[in-house]
Image 1 (cartoon, rainbow, N blue to C red):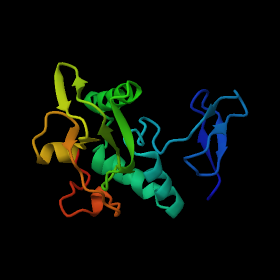
Image 2: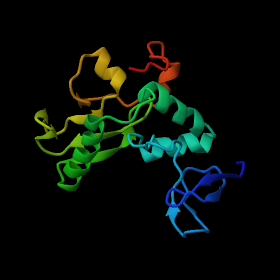
Image 3: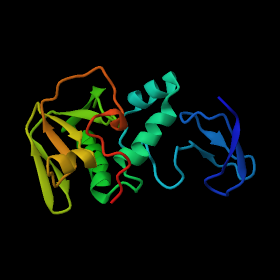
Length: 181
């Protein structure tokens, strides 16, 4: 990996960085410690399972995944409030023991984790609800999936087949190459 300098997220001073997104760096000027992200404005990894991200980093293709997420999945915008609500609700339900994270993750970028419902329940998105039953699987639905299937909420509920092949959206036949709204 090439050494480079990035700005400190706290004070803006230059910080030496080895190019690894998985290790924190410390600012010698203000002492702040932070984990560099692939984008300065938004956490591109918000929806990506840690294991999936580590696989891309191990293969040396993490930058390709970040590019795919930024332009194919996020459409060069920030995550929506519904996307952020999905993350918060998954954390709440996991903490309550209603769902658990599976060892597998979605086959297509950004490779979000899949959750198994341990009991009947619901995801709450502002004034809308997505109900699920015990033993169903839950996964975040990307904007392309929501558009294709006319979904109001960023969640898929069902039984999903495990797939070993990881794909970038930009490599898929129906990918929305860099679409921006």
